[in-house]
Image (cartoon, rainbow, N blue to C red; front, side):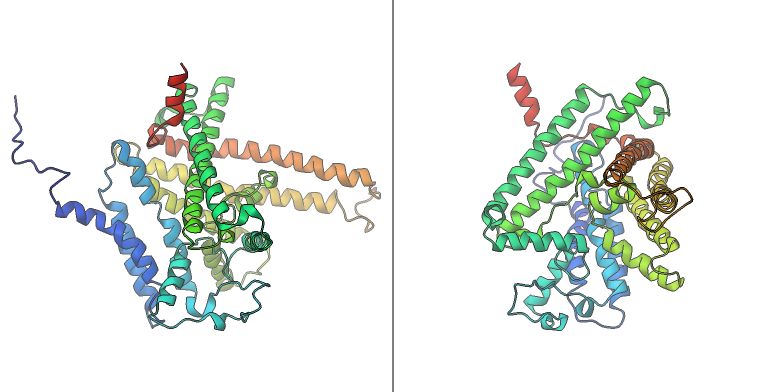
Length: 443
């Protein structure tokens, strides 16, 4: 029988533990360092200096024992170590560009009092304006409203701005903040319901005992698990996005148009390239393109060639593989072998360029040999298409595309879900289950 001397045991709630604070410190320093990277004037060696500092602090965050990888803090640990979504854009912008010269805010057509040149937006060094500019750059991985941002996202921003200036009620700042909060709450309820259904309807097996099976039961269970994983990721990311949008616009830190939707339309998902390029969040689009464009230049590859496209895809999914392993690996210890996690993430992400290239080749062959331009002839036996054919055939092809995308992700997502199931994410809980309380009261 052993006894514990409670008089010498420090209280975790009242006593200051310097060691614990040192474990928390990297998580405090990281966002500060991301902002400071943009703040000082350009000087020789600025990019290597901050790249080294960011690498050190990011690694300290990854290896820190805080939050503990046990119990309810596991989800917090994973969330904090997903900060690479903000760190990677800073690294690319510092290494590949001079932010003071290359980046400026998009000036809208209605802003007649502003000169549409980047030089007109220069701010004094070591000023509050420079600090605020740094904060804005860090807080927008998608580069919303900046000259180097995605044309698709900036077009959405421009349309939202036009509607706000036209006095549309839902895009006024107060109304937008309220609507964002409502959407965030709806996401929370839906997420809660999905997690409740996961416990009641689906049994997610341990990753090591989860094997391929072609029986109807095995395929059905796999489909359920993958749908739950998709819903969980989609609802979770939308929840945090809408909450941030409500805070930002509600406090007057920015306008509603700075928050274009995080995800695109499901109707665009008739190719895997559209899934990643139009539907899925675009947090990593700009930094990945920045690195791959430089690689294309160094290799003297034609910019719009098939090889350049393959380089862009491979680079983007290599980066995604690395950082998903890094973040999920922080909660894998004691739950799932790191080697298996690396294998699972690598297979899933590195299959995506293969799928995009296959569908691209099929569409190119179809366009060349089957869907020849009207009036320009084609293979022997080709005739002019009727108006009905011009409507029906593209619709049929799009329908085939939806089936292809569903089948592709049904097969390839197996490894992605297996990795996350291996670390036990299916056992994580929301802080408070509203739906469970409602159902208990209803019974």
